[in-house]
Amino acid sequence: MINDYENTIGIAVFGYNRPKELGKTLSRLSTFTNLSSYMTKVIVFIDGPKNKNDKKKLEEILLLREKFLDFDFKISDVNIGLKNSIYKGIDKIAHDFEYFFVFEDDIILLANLDDIISRVLKTKIFEDYSCVCLYCPFGINVRNFFKQVKFIETYRMQCWGWFSSAKNWNYFRRECSDSLLKSIDKKEYIIEIGEDSYLRLQETLFQNKALWANQWIGFNKIINKPSLVLSSSFTSNIGIGTGANKFSQLSRVKEKMNFYVSKFKLIILKHYDIQIRKITNNELNIITNRRIF
Image (cartoon, rainbow, N blue to C red):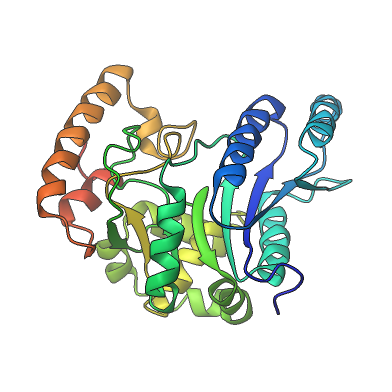
C-alpha cells in the first residue's frame, strides 16, 4: 500500500555513528532534491547507540536534523543492528512510496541520477529486474565518465546505492524464507554470482550472520529477477571501502593499476555496449576476485 506520497520518489539514507560523512551525503542529497525534476522525500534512518562514544556521535547527528529541516529523521532509541535497521527502514519506505532509492551515509551521487530515474520508469524495468545498482562491476572509483545510461544484467547487487520498487521489495519480504534459500543450487550460484556471495549466504543461513543483502540476492536468483548495474557511471565509494569486498585489501599500487585497467575497459565497452546486456565472465572474474590485475 502506497501512502501519502503518490508520484514521489522516496530516498532512504541509513546511518549509525558517522555524523561527518552523513552531513556530506545529506548536503549532496539536498542539492539533488532541489534540482531534480522529480518530487522526492528523504528519510534518514539512524540506528541507536551501542556505547558512550555512539551517544556522542548521536548528539552530532541531532544537529544535522536541525540543519536539514526538509528531511525526515527516524532515530532509534536503542541499537537494533544493521539487518533489522535495514528491514525496518525499507519496509517503511516501501509502504509509503512506489519507487525508492537506498543510500548509505557516505555516498557520492551520480550527476545523471534524474536520467536514471526517467529511463527506469519509462521502460518499466522493475517488471523484469529487482533493482538498479548505482555501481560499476569493476568496483573502481571511475565516476561518471559517460552520460549515456546503459545497464549490465547481473545478480550481483550492491546494497548501498540502489533504486527499486515497493512491489519488488514487498514480494521479497513476503515470500523469502530460509528454507527457500537453502534450496539454491551451489554450483549454479557460484558460476553465475560468485563463491564469495555464496559463502556469505551460507553464513547468513547457518551462522546467524546479519548479511541481509545476500538473502535479497539469493531470492532474486530463485525467481529469475536479476539486478542491473550501470556500465559507465556509478557512485565513487562502493567497492573501495573498508571491507566492502576484496578490493579493499589490495595495496595502493594494485588499486591504482586496477583503476587504469578498468578505465580503459570502460572506454572499450562504450563502443560495444547495448542498452541492457548480461555481465561477461571477465567482469564477473574481476568483481569476484577470480582474477586480479
